Length: 357
Image 1 (tube, rainbow, N blue to C red):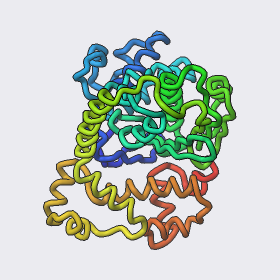
Image 2 (image 1 turned 90 degrees about the horizontal axis):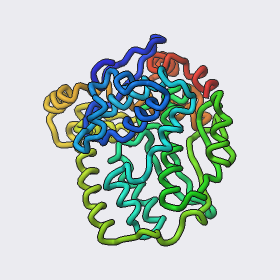
Image 3 (image 1 turned 135 degrees about the vertical axis):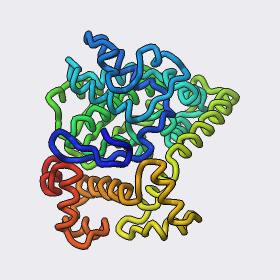
């Protein structure tokens, strides 16, 4: 792979873009450890599973070890190539007991209520280096968790499915640790096609599982997880929350100036300000802003392309907008320019991508 924020050629000739904070080593290696352990059960040595990461197995057991999303991405892709079981992501995710998450896990365990657990997860999920971003909401007696792979947005790619499978299994494990082993989802919706091992989904979750949906989510009846928590402890929770708040600050700072620009661009789709306007907005000279982006090994042009790609995928997945409407929404002068850019990003035309998802 190339440096963060640059175009990364794939084997099919298409390119992907990774956020400029992809290389920040600030996360616990617990997800990598779970994947390596599961691959080990299949007879795959840790050294092979970790190839390309610069990590050794002993580091996964050291609480001081910090990893970056790039290393996690490498292990996931290694797993896709090496795994002898198609359900490897699920099996690895089932290893993620609530205590594997350190202070974040203890904050969940010591929360006063299950509603507080969900609110806490909404705010602090990013500190654990999750494969998926999450958001809890409520609907007619159900808790609804929307989740999307953070760095793998293309639902036609195996890595997108793999990260969703891991996240689902991990969430199931965590909630059962909190609410009891009788907990089950009421429904799971996924934005990708049913894989060959689709029967395993229904066996594991014991509920309807819908593929080719416009979004990823799971739902569960609040009767499973509502009211006071059995292990509530206000003092422990306050201490754990304080530490999680500090970690959240570190994660936010690790994104650097690029993260700030990305947020500005996402908030103004189709009306993307120039780098000069952004510099003025954040109180910085344009030349200084360019230098900071260079230090973070990215550029305004790279960040704009990344945001456009992610928004385009969302529009194609979740709306019926035409290519012309999407092109206008993304600030392209015509649909042809949008089609060329999207094909360059994903290896598929917008129409091909929409059919695939």
